[in-house]
Image (tube, rainbow, N blue to C red):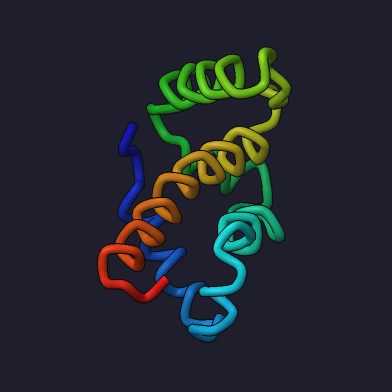
Length: 110
């Protein structure tokens, strides 16, 4: 799913500049956690509902599939727009960080 992936990518780009090269090299396993799990992407139900737009059910379905595959159960509170947005961003963030680390590997930086 690519809904607002570019926006999430921009969030990553804006965040990664806060980490120096050495920290990134030594903490690749923590990079996703640091950028996508130490703070909420969106706070507030209204703001989250607006962000989800008409894709809310597709996003819920996407999260369900991810959680069932990775955890064997669904734990996200789908009655909370904030929880839906933040879990979706967390999942897309995994892809973005993985792509970033793969680029570092290809460049021989990591």
